[in-house]
Structures are given as structure tokens and as C-alpha cells.
Amino acid sequence: MFERIDTICLTVKNVEQSSAWYQELGFKVAFKGKGYRVLTVGNSEVPLTIEEGSITKEENQTYPIFFTKDIKDTYKKLQEKGVAVTELEDDGDNNFFDFYDLDNNKLQVCFWE
Image (cartoon, rainbow, N blue to C red):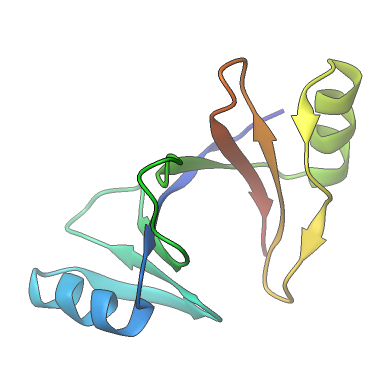
């Protein structure tokens, strides 16, 4: 169902400022999307995604994103297992949806080419 952890996502207040800050620390921008940046560091295979959003202490803002080759099948399998899932979305670059574990921790699944 899942191929790998695709990225770890952090929510930031301002994606442009945060991206510049991470770049000063040696991170490289691998991809720019609307409201987010995918950053790599060193020879790590798992990038860091920073995503612009609301910062609150009441909600966990860090979550893994899993990659799948067949997002529709993965979506269906999770639904069949009774897992809480959001709608399947397409932002033009990625297809993705969120799902939640037993403690209501957010996880995400993506597919991109």
C-alpha cells in the first residue's frame, strides 16, 4: 500500500521567510509549490516540507507524508479498514489526502510523477 515515507511536513507562518532561513542552514529547495517548499539536506533520502498555515499549540503541526504508486487504491483500502480519511485532492502537482490514527494524529498520503 505505501512505498516509503515521502517527506516530513512542518507548518510555518511564512513559507518565504522560513525557506530562506532553512537555506541559510544548508537546505536546498527541491520543489516549490503554492504555499509550500520541499527542502533537502545533505544526502538524506527523506526531504523536509514546509507548509504555510496557522500555528497553534493545540494541534500537532508535524506529520509524515507517505508515498504510494496507486493513491486511489490506497484510499479505498484505508476506507475499507474504517480509517478516517479526508477527500482525495489534486493541487495540480500532487494527489493527496489526510488520514488519522487512533489518537487522531494526522498522516498524509501522496502521489506525484
